[in-house]
Length: 185
Image 1 (tube, rainbow, N blue to C red):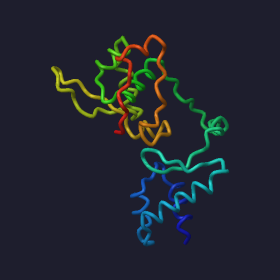
Image 2 (cartoon, helix red, strand yellow):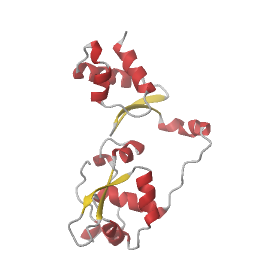
Image 3 (tube, rainbow, N blue to C red):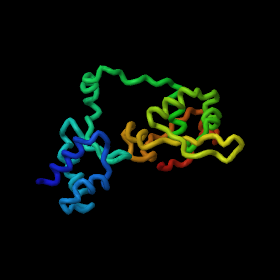
Image 4 (cartoon, one colour):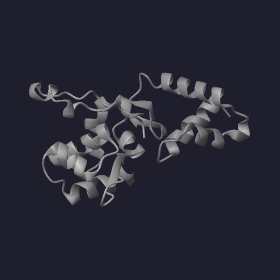
């Protein structure tokens, strides 16, 4: 059997992205090493460059996905509407993504308003954020950070791929608005 066919079938059949170690374990009977598997993945990506699907590498591994420009037609297959997110939720996930790990108090200080429990719960239910520890201050508030699921859902491999923050004119002079260096979690 052709190794490229096997890998292609595995990626199509898997409901979740597959990592290189997972793929290697699935084809270990064929005596495949990591460089050979990486070459096969590169060939598959090239094979699909002109197709409606693409082989994407996201934080959780490799997956096939529909190209972005075809999404309007494919979305017609799914009657369920994608949830609309409030500005507050989007601001909250952006703060967590760019400033992580952060506490709820940190988010409230940046936004200038109280963060609703529903927003935090929604982000956790979507598996976009998780508690990664507790700050060593009185009350030991939870520290939130983004997850691999967040990266996968936004088609990112690392946080370094987040777009740069566009600050308004009056905010640029204030060092409090300057984001810290981004790190991968």
